[in-house]
Image 1 (cartoon, one colour):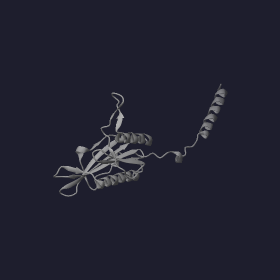
Image 2 (cartoon, rainbow, N blue to C red; image 1 turned 135 degrees about the horizontal axis):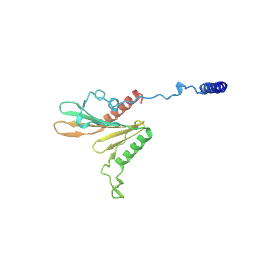
Image 3 (tube, helix red, strand yellow; image 1 turned 135 degrees about the vertical axis):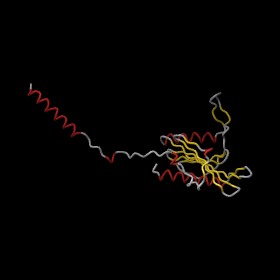
Image 4 (cartoon, one colour; image 1 turned 180 degrees about the vertical axis):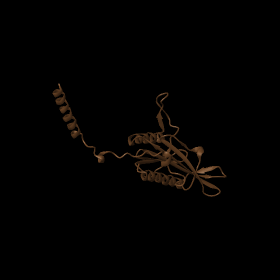
Length: 198
């Protein structure tokens, strides 16, 4: 009985040693580098990066995957500039691309499907398209209330629009200067995403 026990123990010991010898060694170089997730509140341009502007909290909000901030800066005693930035993050680039093109159709289609009554209906958000340079992976500019630049970059969608406000006349204006400022803001935001290694 003792001999049988010793023989069985011997074969179990040999089997365990072979199992250890045949276990593949993990190559640390093959492990993908994990990127730290940065809150959008830290990723979006801050007040200092937007010309030392002040945040208008009444027109700013944040959720887990989306943040929108409006900045204001006095240019002189009669004028101030409003800059709105919206940054949305998606799980991957396929999802962000689909959302980008879905919104693009929404802005530039005169008629859209009527999901309630069937058929087609007038698109109340139909907007004029403003030609702009290509920014990021893809971009466009629509003019609904004011020219808004929308850019797809990796798994992010960035929007920006700038208006000049005449304080005492209660009037706002958008022109080529404010459009160029929107484009400048978008490029700054892309640079910040790159600097964070995202």
